[in-house]
Amino acid sequence: MLRSVILAASRSSQVERLVATAPLTRDVVRRFVAGTGTDDALRATRELVADGLTVTLDNLGEDTVTPDQATATRDEYLALLEALAAAGLTPAAEVSVKLSALGQRFDEQLAYDNVRAICAAADQAGTTVTLDMEDHTTTDATLDTLVKLRKDHPSTGAVLQAYLRRTESDCRELAGVGSRVRLCKGAYAEPESVAYQSAREVDKSYVRCLNVLMSGAGYPMLATHDPRLIAIGEDRARWFDRGPDEFEFQMLYGIRPEEQARLAGEGYTVRTYLPYGEDWYGYLMRRLAERPANLVFFGRALASRK
Image 1: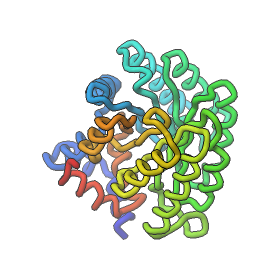
Image 2 (image 1 turned 45 degrees about the vertical axis):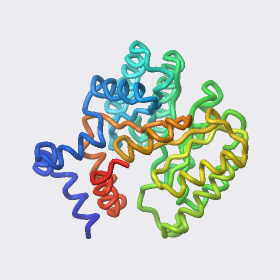
Image 3 (image 1 turned 120 degrees about the vertical axis):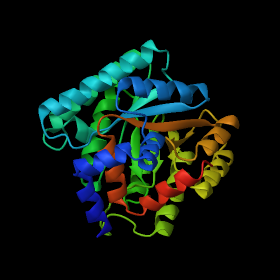
């Protein structure tokens, strides 16, 4: 029921105006989203890089339903990459791209052409691209696209979600030399047939996947805010004799900033996932609807800066 309420709210312009203008909810938006435009993204990126962090930027928008929308998203990324390079923010800043925003749901070839153009622009800017992962129905198509992109753009990053039962096997496939893999828990509502349902099962899967990536020849990117998993990541790095430049931690913008600073201060690479764009409201509401428990998560993040 709560999920239905949140989704209904996500379609309400009145609720959106309330969220954007009410003091408390406005602070939530500013805490977790850089802003609506490229200038906002550049400002936040400069601040994070000045603090010793690296960044991956996500131009928000997943509900692309027309070729014109997909093309507009591509063009925004091209402009963003040019601006990042001009500002001297690459290679510290890269970009994260959702194939659904580039037309994957209605035209896979269009999506591929669009993301290939973004990868070429990233090369020109001196940085790279990571393909975000979405719900399980798109996993195979996204990984197929990754394989094709890596022929010309080998640094293109992948994202794997530990709550999917298939992910340990995918980690073994993607743990090769030069392979950048972001490992996250996963946030979409998935059926038990394809995904672990309990937090304990997901955590155990995360650790198994982490071990596969850390023992491989690739470049693991550990996306988690969980203190226990972060500690395990530090321990596994020592166990597998990985230096600070041979893996990284990743966290969302606005979540545990003091922990991000601590890890960076200890010499680790820490990358902040920085969302921005006109679809900030949809982004927040979808994250809450996918897992209503995220309401508690975001509430705790507001209450604590650690």
